[in-house]
Length: 305
Ligand code: 8NA
Ligand code: MG
Ligand code: MG
Ligand code: MG
Image 1 (cartoon, rainbow, N blue to C red):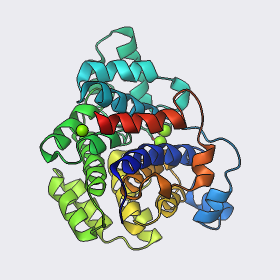
Image 2: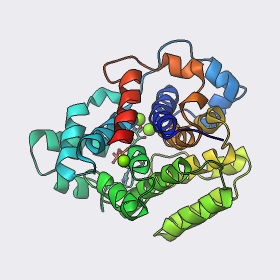
Image 3: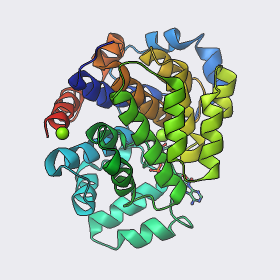
Image 4: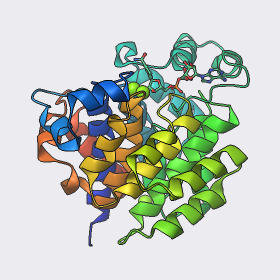
């Protein structure tokens, strides 16, 4: 398989946005309900008839990518400024994230909000859902990848489980960006070697053995990083050759469907490239000022920096 880096960078950002936008249609629905509505992934994708709009997941990803494209690294102040500049509350931000970004906007002490709003900080999946640009940008720079993923989490997510989730998605995106052939055992060995907690080590061991939808569901579909990051990684590893299956299978789990599909789609798109995203979906992704064309261009800027 030969996929250019440009196709991978575009595939990851657009794959994330498409997963987010499709998944966003079904957020918080149950697996039972979705399984009654759709016979499978194909019928889920064929259901899309009009424009699909992304949510906070893509909006925050854009902020990270802009900082990397401008600065060449994630720096705290430019990142906060980019979160604020891109912030549209109606795009469905998490409760804690909203409080932190609004404190940034007001020039108040957002660090205190980030560490005190939830005890120990947020372990939501908000740092993991937006980290793909770090994985792309540092795909061949192991020394900076994890530190930069941490840095990108910090303004909003100080809980170790929130940060670790971001580091694992970044490492997954980086690994597949370097890969012409998916080597499942290598992939999981590397990710498990990056784990700092027993919780993630256990979940990734389960993910490495996931060969069915039932096992995928057992990994979780929640808004917490630990209940969604391993699931997204496992869904990619279950269908490495299909973007549609990778995002469709996690959307049909219900729960945090936009974020599961954003993370899974970012990994799959980085591996398979932009051509692997079904035309039906990509054609319908929003054409707003920071829509499809902007994302494609942003991916190219990231690559050229
Ligand atoms: P966050 O930091 O608000 O965390 C998300 C949620 O996780 C919180 O609202 C809490 O319920 C829970 N949580 C996190 N940390 C703790 C803790 N220490 N103690 C107890 N509960 C905790 O926001 P985020 O950016 O991490 O969230 C990302 C999610 O929010 C994504 O799913 C994204 O799509 C968005 N989201 C929005 C809606 C919506 O209102 N439309 C619904 C679900 C998710
Ligand atoms: Mg969202
Ligand atoms: Mg979500
Ligand atoms: Mg470069």
